[in-house]
Amino acid sequence: MKVALFFWDRLPALTYGGTQRLVVYLARGLAAAGHQVTLIAGQGSRMPEATVVPVDLAIARASEFDIHRHLPGGLDILLSFVPLRTPPDLPWVRCLPGNWKPGTTGPPNTLFLSEDHARRHGGRAFVYNGIDPADFHFRPAKDAYDLFLGRLHSIKGYRWAIEGATRTKRKLLLAGGWRPSLSRYVRYVGKVGGERKAALLAGAGCLWMPALWDEPFGITLIEAMVSGTPVLGTRRGSLPEVISRDVGALGDTVDELVALRPTLAAIDPEACRARVERYFTHHRMAEGYLRMFRHFLSEGVLPPGEHTEGAG
Image 1 (cartoon, helix red, strand yellow):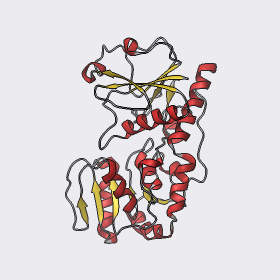
Image 2 (image 1 turned 120 degrees about the vertical axis):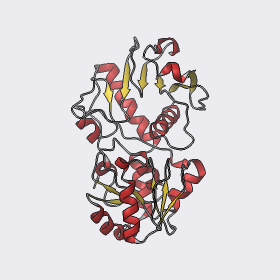
Image 3 (image 1 turned 60 degrees about the horizontal axis):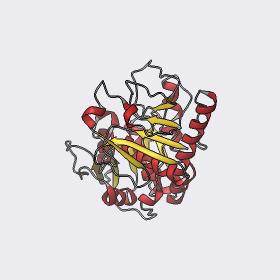
Image 4 (image 1 turned 180 degrees about the horizontal axis):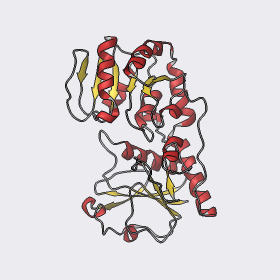
């Protein structure tokens, strides 16, 4: 199958970038499955697994942008991770990486990232994110710190992580985009990526993910799990689908998360990695997207997504 992926940023992202990582891993998974991948992305993008068609980012984000002239011939389908003002004259699917306003229903060619994500937008079609385990380190023995990794925005719940670290008297490493006010139990390490990020994930006693919004997926969850690191999070968005009881714990308040933190010591790091290897690799993600593409090309609609087993 000849597939084009479109995203209006430079790829891969060096540090933060959930959607950026999704696009890269999907291209890698599709190529590994023997399919021909074209990546239409910002100038300077590099991806060995795909033919890169560079676009000027200012032009790509403009209202008059027309993707037609950037599409190679013979494409079977286009997958866009951003809205297209001028739809192409070939089959195409829109993947929604974020959230629309409550009550917004997507068009029938919209693909979501989890069952909860789809349901909240009036859809059924979803494919879970996946990562390449080779990009991460697995460590069963953990260091004496917990980790928060992501945008330091109130909806991500980083303040809950700080409060939890203070109350449990555990060292917390806070990795994100700007420096907040900290407690003596918290150390800010700034933006991280690559080897530094992989090492932090592998060494953490747990990943705090106290989301205060409905996470469409939360790729950091599986990055921690593949490193053998359990997750402590809230029951928001996709988290109950991704986090089963054998890889983490979920609560609704800071009090609950603080009480649950000691229980994570009993979690087997091997179980964390095994869940990712079963459900959330780039190969599994590519299989899901290919199932969606084939059904859409033959039937004109996207099929329901496939849920994981053992969710908490």
